[in-house]
Each structure stands twice: as C-alpha cells, then as structure tokens.
Length: 519
Image (cartoon, rainbow, N blue to C red; front, side, top):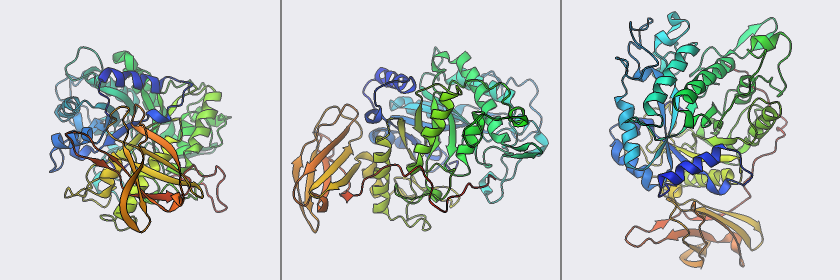
C-alpha cells in the first residue's frame, strides 16, 4: 500500500490462472493463490540478498510475486519536462530504456518457479504528464514522494509505455517474457499520492477526474496488452484501490456510475466521459483491503460508508453485481486481494498489535477470504519491515531479519472457531501445498501441557482443510497443526484457541457512519 502454493508444474499454474479469470460455476475458495510483494527486497534496493529472499518466498509456498514496474524508473530523461529526442516510448529496445532492474527480478522469479503479477505503476517521467510544468507534484507529508510526479499522466503515452512492457515481458519468443500471470494498471488511483488531481467542481456537480483518467489509462493499457501479449488480454486487473479515500466512489465513477451505483445523468455523463460508456473486459477487480493504518483485525468495524477494509469486501460484491447488470463489466469476474497485511508492534508502536496477535490476525484474515468464493487470491505485503514510519511495517521478519511469529503462521495458517459447547471448526493450510497429505492436529489443555494428536485431516490439492471437532471442552483447548516431512524440517502452526465466527460485517453501516470527503 505504501510504495514500498507453489505448484509442481508451471503448466498447471497457467491453467489455474485461466480458470480464475474465466467465469466458473464452481467455488474457488479452496483454490486461492498466494501473492507476495516486497519491492525493496526483491528488486535489490535494500541490504537483504534479493536472491535469498526470492528463494524464501518460494519456500514459504508463494505462487505469485507482485512488483511495481515504475514508468519513472525505467524511462530516460525522467526529470526533464521534454521527452528525449528520438525516444520511441512503445519500443522496448529504444535507447534510453533501463530494464536491468526488472530483468533481474524476472530472472530471480523464474529461477524459483514463481509467476509474476506485473503492476504498471507511477510515478511518471515528467515529460509523460499532460502538463509537465506541474511536475514534480509535491505531496504534503510524504517526503519520499516529494520529487515524484503523478499529475495528469498522458493516456496515449501510457498506452505506448504498456506496449513496450508487453513486448518485453509478455508471452512468446522473447528472452525476458513468459512469466506474467496477471497484469494490473496503476496503483491505488483513489489516492492523491498516486494520481492527481482527484476531483473537479463544476456548476453541474463534482467530477471525479481521477476515476475518469484511471478508466482511460486502463483502456489504453489493456488495448496494448491485447495487441502485443494477446493470450493475456483477459488477465488485466482493474482497480488496485486503497481501502481508504473513497474507493467505492472511484470504482463506481470509473465504471460510469454515480456513488449510488446508477448511470450518470445529464451534463455529468459527458463530464465524466460517460456519454457512451463501453463494457470494460476486466480480468477482475483488485483491492488492498487494509484496516486503517494497517491495524485492527477481521472484527474491526468501519464508520465510513465508502471504505473497503477486509471485513467489508461484501460492499465490492454490490459494486460488481450492479456494474455487471448494467453491462459495464463481464459477469462472474473475481476479486483479487493483491496487497494486504497487518502492521505489528514492534516496530510500529501506534498500532498496538503485539507480535503474537499479529500472527493470529493474518490467519484470521485468510480464513475470512477463504470463505468468499469470489476471492481468487490472498496477499502478503513485505517480507522484511522497513525503517520508514511513512511506510507500512507489515513484514514477516523484523528489519534486522529476525522472524516474527507471523512467519510460521503464514506458512501454516490455523484458525479454530467455536460453533457450540464442545464443538469447534478447525481450518488450516500447509504451504507449500504438498498434495493430499495428512498433517497432525494436536490439542492441549488451556493451562498448558503436551499436545496430543486427535485428528489427521486430509489436505486438498491446494493444501487446505476444514473439519469439525466434537469433544468435551473443545472450545477451551489449545490447538496446533504439525507436518513432519522426511528429510525436511517439521512444519508447525502457531498455537490457536477457539474464537468467535469470522464473517463479513453487516452491509448496513453503524449509526455514526459517514461518507468521507475525497482529497
């Protein structure tokens, strides 16, 4: 959010991604893929070894690594307000392009059998703005973005940039290509940190100019991908919205709908660029469903009508259903959680989530997503924490490298839910998916003692299981999952206790709910 199950056969992973993008009547909750992102580490910007980090992602059972491919980062003359003479934006081999950083990233991913979610991302070279004189666009309070430009990216030039990316990293006989499993366009367009300006007041009403530009950027990018990486034309995700700053309004307006999900009327139709709204052939809607400040838990409530934290993803169901009914998007598209995590204390003392609670929160969130067949992917943002307080510290390791309890919890998630007296549901997973094997589920008394195996649940092909366990005092016991692998270390979950049912919160807002002002 803050700019900062491995399968044994690649062919099987490709088939699975096609199945996720194309509508299906079968539930996909038992086949969610895991996305992992840590640009600073995986791109080699930190002191941590990027090759070891990528290998660690594979060992943790990750399917896909996400990366921001920054338009600014790879472009020549990026702080010039005039495009370099002779530079062909659509040609990946045009002198001036600097792909080395990303070529190395793709090579690391390939060496570890990992697919890539490629997010074409800001910032932009100054010459790529419609009004280069406004660059850099300084963002108050965000020192790391002080020299960045997010001001009115030129849609035509962005389409050409996407062409260059697709020609270099798409499928086909090209040395660096063939690993992209999903594309997405832009990052968090509902935030002024990444796309500006956001709103324009007119005598006919407020126009969400950021949503309109995002729609146009997405269309230009998707057309380029369809032309130059045709087999991936139905894998271009839409949205990538932050959970805060009116994501629903942005999504609705980008789909030519007002904040109530109805088509724009009158003069606003033209001002929003919706005189003749077209159907957007999206691969799915991507979201970053953090709670505020990356804190809280699956039970945290929101006082906003227009936010999308994890417990309120059902609001996105409504957006997608309305948009599909009105012909704005295809029916049956999925929800892709492409960036997510919880901050821990340490290092961020503001969130007041201790390290053990942090581990439990990650598992509970994954249990929530598992229950929604529309959710096609889960995500973990960061392997290592970072030093900056402006960025989220949601890593599985502290900055110095020490593992948090969340590291093991991510590898072997476990959640126990009280159903009634003496009856619990036990849900869990083992990463990486090792086929249809049976780990040991152990229980111990609430006050301590040794764990005794009571069940050996059968994992499905993606590594998940869900069982009910009935025994006296089941709701008071402690639980642990363990898998002994011959010749390898034994995998163990965190110790879990029974909690209350995990589900999306009510669609109806609490009495103090409010619709926040956009920036």
